[in-house]
Length: 331
Image (cartoon, rainbow, N blue to C red; front, side):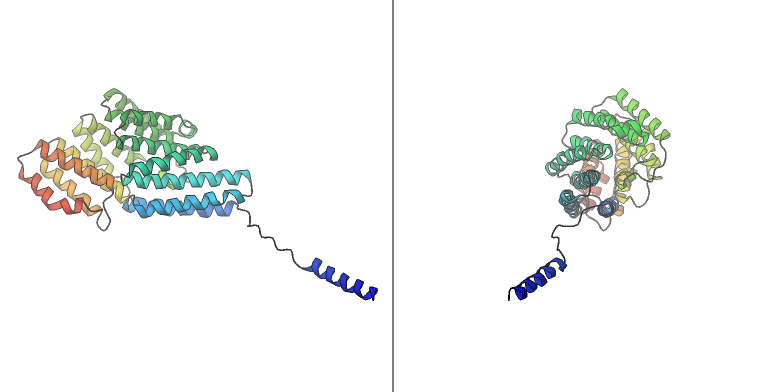
């Protein structure tokens, strides 16, 4: 009897040993997961280039950041954890950029603060520069122009800006815009010179992230047009705007529309009213089928304000406002 029980017990034990041990832990997160998350960033940047920042893009970017951060605890190594922090910081920077383009300033500030923290956790100087670049733009929208200068200098001080002249050029160009807003002509021209010199030394690098795909010779020329217009060089600014528009890639519809709006401003500042109104009208054609981002609506508002201020008795100004007011307010 005891022998039978012993054998039965032994068989049961053997069955238990033979049964597979189920591991309820989630699989570790590795390089393939990071690559997949980064591909989502590329898709969002392509959407931004076409139609500009909007709330759907911002929500998608926040979801991407949450997904990346949710995987940190399951990363296969410290290196993978840092790469996940980098991806999350880039998603948050994308969300912040969408808010900046839509002039949702409080939301943008919150996103950038968190992105800068995660960039530090990631030890990623590229995303750090990206955040400071966006901080400079946000400070301008807040009318904190000295802060915009300081953010530009912070971008210049990042390791990637010191190491890669391409990023250094972007940082100098952003600083030039901030100097121009303060009316510092000498500092503006000096920073533009540094930006042009650095870009001339830059080499093509396919490893650069998609968010910086907008920058190059054409974009620097577009930024030069803005800076020149702000310091009163309207004719030079118009020439730069035309040159920029000949080089901005067609997929960057939002950037082309912004450069066209800037062209309109340079023309109205020279009191060339007919060309100015034609240029401003082209903005709506370029953005046809998409809402006008808040930053662009604000720029068109600046154009209309300057139009009626500089030529209050010109009928073309009132006609432009009457014709395009509904499109201009399209959100």
